[in-house]
Length: 426
Length: 143
Image (cartoon, rainbow over all chains, first blue to last red; front, side):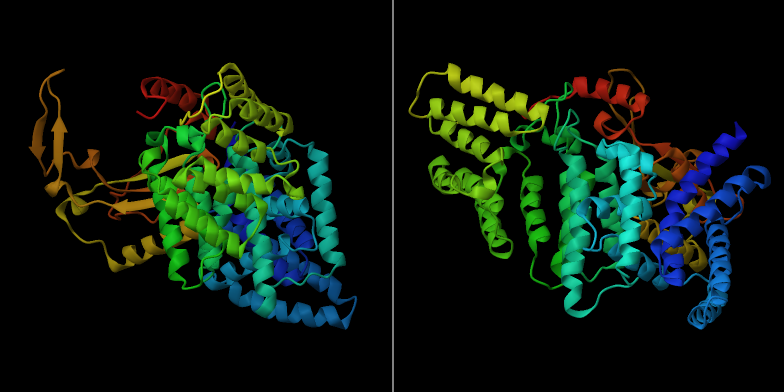
């Protein structure tokens, strides 16, 4: 029993310390795969020792020191293989001495930043980036990642092994990119975090509507990024977007698991703490002085909903303007579709339908179920029930989410049953 | 899962004695650590109970009774709280253990309490049941 509780405590310590340890070791050995192995070695030693000796007062420092000692052993062994390694070993060894003393806070932050830039490197596939980031920065086990993504454990394990090999083979340097390289690389990091969040927020397939573990992990990573890269407007923008969206997690489904649309959610159940945090993050984004990027703009839109105490209070004119700004910095048919929705809310369904009709020929939206779903909604509002019914049916056939399909079929039925009407504003 | 780390009041905190610079620095460093780990949600310190107001209902269904502070039962009072988001109970304990002794003088007490969360956000059966009960009483749609 005692051993078991010690193991659970060690798991918790690992969760808190592992990213910092792996990041520090990666700087020494310049390979995140080797760094993780060495950190794992330290963990194994702790798991053997601590149930007997008790957990040390500063377990993080203990693990770090043990792991670094192993890294030095490795570097010394490699020294005999060539002069190049000898040099590397000596400089690392010198630095090692001072690090045993006070841990330099700035250094830790820099290492973590280097680590996340490496695990989110564009040389990797998106899936690999996500898995590696969850593993090395989130401290999640392969099993936990597999569970969150509803894929078999060996698939994730293989993904991670291959990702590490790819990074080694491509000789990806362990560093924070500079100059012109920084923006696109930062975009890649933020993309990984937001994909993770979205995967948890609205599962694209299967029965699960929300998978909160992924949302929580993405939020945690975002919050860490906001502290280690505070000068980046879009980092705060992304954090704001995730905080505000997460505030609605509990109200997105009924007790029987059916999705509830934003306008129908019980706003008294929105998490006010997360909303406040989101609005604060948005202010931080604005305070950096940079023009608002796609994440900050989406967060601003989300904030409009968060500020409205009732659906009727929603400032649709402002939302439509924000979508227009978003369409300028990040033009896409999906943004256009959302702009159409906000315009219809601000100025009536006919205005929105005009834009939506123009999008019908858009090839990238061919399989996008929200297009017929939105069109159906606008048609229904204009009283064109038969057409609306067809669109809802089409949308239902296109979605991969069982819950969403049920909701769409219900709306199709509602419109099929009702007689034709000129005007039926909901 | 969310936990609240509650710092209990002491004679000093109730007397309005300011904590030492050393403790203030240590607390700030600790909060920064929580922030950098992405687990901090909120942290607040409270004024002493001298300015507090207590509203109680001594009779069932009766009127509210309002009593001004200070209150005497120091050990029952709180001096502040920190709200964290963690993955396990053990992680919460680990963070609480790292908080600097809030008062020194052998009086420091930190109490950890789990926050009740919606069933969608927690695998914990007990909070799911509690929340289901609360949900039944809440309106499901906007008025």
